[in-house]
Amino acid sequence: QHVMKNFFLTLHMISMSLVVGTLFLQSLSVVLRLRLKKQEEIDGLRSIQNRIHKLIYYPILAVTILSGIMLTVKTGEFGQANWIAANWIAAKLGLLILLIVLGVLNAKQIQADLLPKKYAMMVHIAIFLIGAGMIHLATTKPF
Image 1 (cartoon, rainbow, N blue to C red):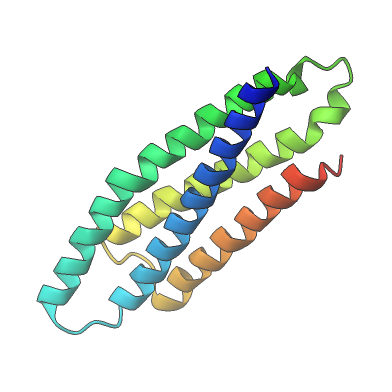
Image 2 (image 1 turned 120 degrees about the vertical axis):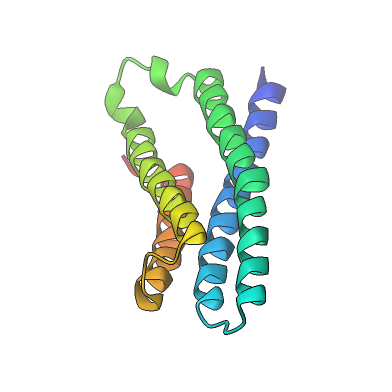
């Protein structure tokens, strides 16, 4: 059981890093795309962004969520009599929901430039901060 827990922990950490990294770079590339002048370049970058979002972001998000579920089952965090001990997981799930919302916003921004450049830039700053918050909660388990 210890080996399986370590496997799911490693899988979860790697996939979560890829989710945050992919979203971060995708939102940064949205900002860079807003600076392009030639329509062919804009269309080419948009096509690459779409493929990354569909072929990398969504599958790795699924792996992250599934490995996180398996990890909580293997560690018994939700099976504890003291639910307060698992409050950090509830906070982390709240941040995950925010991260998914930012991913959806990013997907919409890839399709059409909905946000002005300064707001599009704020999306990738929020992605970075939420990712850092999730890592902090998982490593320190503050509550």
